[in-house]
Length: 400
Image (cartoon, rainbow, N blue to C red; front, top):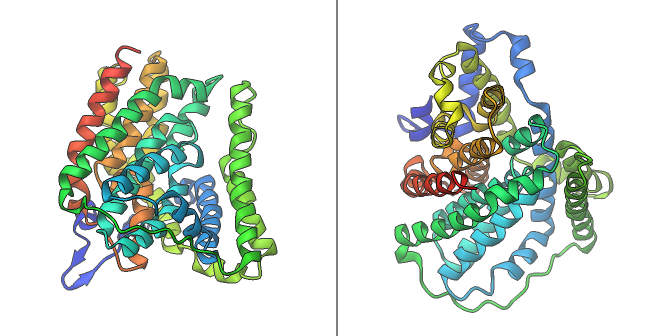
């Protein structure tokens, strides 16, 4: 199945990632490799609810035209492609630390495609810039991605935001700079001057735009409240799925376009995630990957980093962290080792398409508009980038 996702071609037919994953899930159910009750329990409702809520908000931002207005203020004043890529890496990287990388994948993909058409830039370069920015940037926050959230909550950290920033912020900033250098080397022919663009698009439906602004504002306020409560040691104010639902509520309750938004969200990606949870649970039950883990792996920072990057390509980083973190804690693991787990399982998303759910979201949304990134196009940038990023986190976490 991994090879099929990499090639995504069967004879003359182009197969989408969600179709492959759904086929795999159905296969393990039909053959009895996983029982139906186990399959139902494997589907993580928190993740599904979070994605649904953010898909509603993302679709509303696109349909109202407000996303285009945001883009004009962030990106349209860039005077070169290099300037634009740099702004994408910095802005999306920093935002992903607070809005979660899957959220930025949902919102950012149509934005990248719009920029590509506006300036006649390769959509592949901008989609890669988005994917790398939100994966790398999300490393330095306990709410940057689902696996970091698991580590922060299950390890009992009293001040997870301070802990993550102290251990991971500086190497993450360095790795964003490295990402820019790699993209410039691979896509050097694309790094040309851009025509001036001073027109700021205005959303056509002011009422709908206002509702979408409220939705986005609710998410930002609730995330900020979570950060404040976490800093005081009081824990999280609201769970991530509840925040997403609160954000979606104004659109679903007060917008006359609720049906249009509801039907327009990316249902295929939700199918992908449900199927992935079932298939990954089946893989875990075989015990195949667990057999590779021993004491030396859970006690060594470089081994934790490398193991996290490699195994996350096959079984997804969230279930990997769910199993691997207790092993580190049982072995008396240090905070630096837990941070290595967070960093390695997250930057696994820079190696291949399958390393992060946010990559799949980006590609699924791009394919809806006739664009895509192949496995090999992603890996030729991701392989050298991930090697260098692992080295940076290894060096920093070994001395911090």
